[in-house]
Length: 375
Image (cartoon, rainbow, N blue to C red; front, side):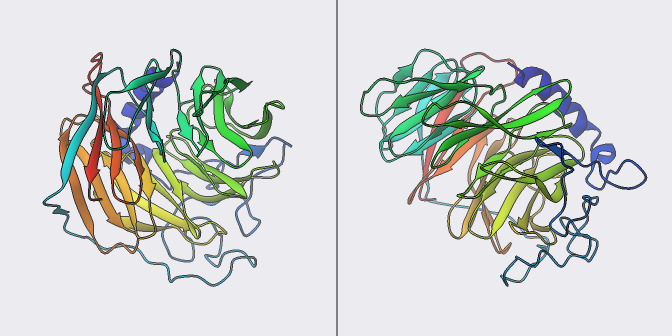
């Protein structure tokens, strides 16, 4: 597993955050451009090599002019969120669904239950109950749709049907931790010393396809998709927020981030969490300037969302982590739960937030799965 080595790299980058901040540029003041699987240089939405990350000014992220693509329809006004005093919610029900789990980094939910992955794939009903084992193997990311659970057992992506039917490997080629599932494929990455590759593993088992390649560090903790594209990044000091068509083709750098962990997407925006700065950013999916939604979220990690809010696990490498609810318009930050050891994965449904904790660094079987209601 690459996670331990990559976490050490990330910790070093956080510790020297001033040297790793966004805006770091190379090659004569121009950010290094990743390449697609066709060998083409990735471009910004304006068709230029990607600039260093900036703010919402004309030199901002994702566009050399800040104007966005001609394909970008009018949308909500962009903004940079000013300082907001966080509040703490009262009256929430905080229930531990499972404890004593071996480093359950990621989780997923659907109508049938909540699923997580440590050394095995586990499941529990959304309203609580004894956890059960779905698979005796598993050591990476996990995702779910209404019919199946998908997970990584390096280097394969496996499928487990919820109706009890036969499952098995859909394909190989995923070695990193974060995956996402779309209508026709599971998307994930693999990496080595030469960089990172985005792949699609079709649900019909027809064979893994390479979608894009970069020379970035070899792990990806932030990955999201919609019906057209995959959005992904990495935890380097200068980390491109990439948009790649789900069927392959040239990738687009929408913005430059730094030490990017969680990535999420809605109908209009891509959001990401920078664990070093504690900032939550957004950029329109079709391009334009990147803007801050929230600042000062200590150890910001993974992101889930609904129509009004983002939900962020906080406190990476911190004994006092929790879950923050961040208004998409930047107007409020509310902590729904605090005092947890390294919260990581997160998901939401109509009423509740579900998250994992991995426990203290180096601890064994110290993770948990927690539900917070209302969200």
